[in-house]
Length: 303
Image 1: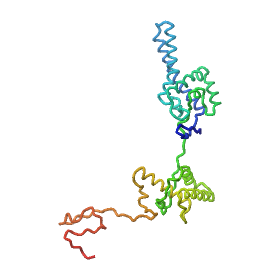
Image 2: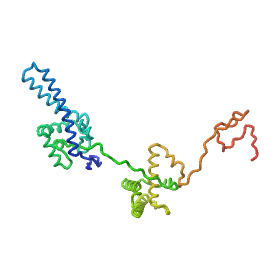
Image 3: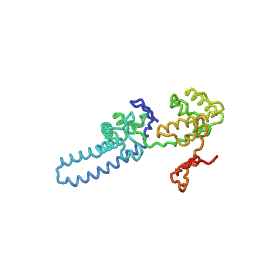
Image 4: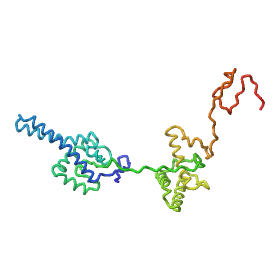
């Protein structure tokens, strides 16, 4: 992993491509380009059979400059650093700050590639890549570019375990604005891996994280609440707030819980009553059963 800092002071973690994958991508590109160059040369030889030697030589030089040199430059410019070989190997050319390359970067790389790859049969490029800390050839040094890996295998993040039901919604009044992102990340990593830790080590880590979180929120750890359960409940509260901000409504699990963790009373859905014969407008059909509606005559039976 190579850390690059952009102009906005954002640290980017990029993985520079190794020499074998770069060499394979170059071989694929060269095979395609030289196959196209040979086909075009044969067609030009047949079509220019009646021309003089100078015209044939001029066309040969123009075809060499257009196909083995110009085509890779155009492809890298239009595809933002992904030629056919790099696309097959999961590589991409980017600037030193992690941004996409432009025509001037592809032009410098292509011009230096004539010397590095074609005239020296790739020897200069291999030596430069082995010497460079980030595997860059001479063309990358002059152009200010870097070949990185696009397809990086990543592990799927484990879900954070849910808190106990009696803690859900209990910390809805906490002020979480002063909790830094690195503390949230540490808490999340602990919760997803606490089952793999030793009991004593896990308890000490949860206690330390809970103390740090309580110091940031200004509310001490409630008595009788285990530190791990406290961390899970606060993380769940943060996720609930993010969901409300994103979707405009609380999650279904949090909506059924009161502000102090006490389950809200169950609400019976409205049920349909059959209409009363002779009194079509006396009782609405969608009125709930637990709501008493007096009849139209005004007489109410004794309780």
